[in-house]
Amino acid sequence: MTIPRKLKRTAKRKERAYLVGVQLKRRGSRWRIQDSLAELGELAVSARAQVVGSTFQRIEKPTNIYVGKGKLEALNELAQAGRFDTLICDDELTPTQQHNLENALGDVKVIDRTALILDVFASRAQTKEGRLQVELAQHEYLLPRLAGQWSHLERLGGGIGTRGPGETQIETDRRLVRDRIQRLKRSLEDVRRHRRLHRARRNANQMPVASLVGYTNAGKSTLLNTLTRAGVRAEDRLFSTLDPITRRIMLPSGTRALVSDTVGFIHKLPPTVVAAFRATLEEIEESTVILQVVDVSHRNAKEHVRVVEDILKEMRLVDIPRILVLNKVDLLPDDSDPVEIAEEISSGYPGPYVLMSATTGLGGLGLLNTVDETLADIANRVPASTV
Image (tube, rainbow, N blue to C red; front, side, top):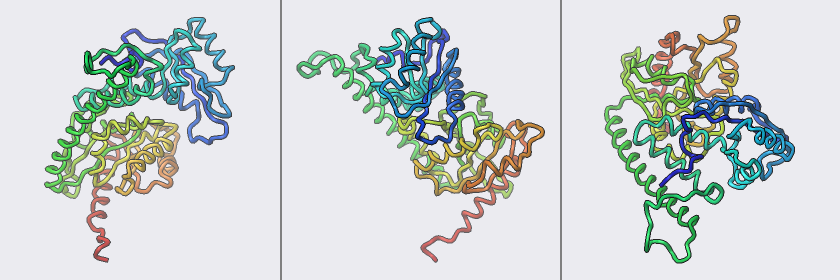
């Protein structure tokens, strides 16, 4: 089955992308629309697009073309002048919104934040498991949009004698996509079963597990390398890690533990992605302690912490003890007060924080000692049944 061009990895030629976002006037947001668009721009660059401009609009209520009439006219003028060939919207569009925007803008390709994230994920997936999870998310996203962006999908299933009487091509394509989704889910269930067996064998050794979670590009892979000398590929780019990586470590107390790196999170992470990456994210469920890594030098560091906490809450993992790792302290301005910044970011966080730099190693021993202390606290807890 052929995935439509809009869901495939970006072609080698850089597309000229124009970014647009909206913010509802009556709905409070912890994010500035400008910051959200800046992040969208980073995603676009990760997908090998050339960002040629951006705009945003505050509106009273959602419209069936995403933006207001005046903003649409302005975008159409830019499109007709050949300023851009791809419009990227900062939210997940409804099929109707995408269809209406494409009709209004002519030959311009319209994609939304979800499609862009999936594009970046597709370029990062290196293992069979990662590719299966990305493809499942793509197909789940594609299914309700087939009518709007229909293209003749190859018939890998079906054929003569398999279609119902009077079935149209779009109905056939929907059936093919649903069939592919079911096959992908079965394949991923096999992956989950294999991972469960692996975790069971690992748990038999009774080694505690510390899972690294955090906002994308917070430095989790670099931290894994610093703590375990793992030699894991660490890059300054979004979603450099899609597949979980686990390594052994010796804590200062002499306790042996496992440290696991997982996929990074992001603002407006689509539910389809969270669901598709269930096999990977289940690794976090087995954690003894969670290390939430955050880029302390980022202007939206506190919001990044909240995004990750919200996702952990959705996954029902908030009962696992957590440590806030305020990474990249070496990137703070020389005239700043790291402790003051740390106190602000960690305000209300349900666990201790550690300031460190995974790049230089500064604060690494302090983090290991904090992990040791947290594990000791867990071991010393009195089970409720004995009280």
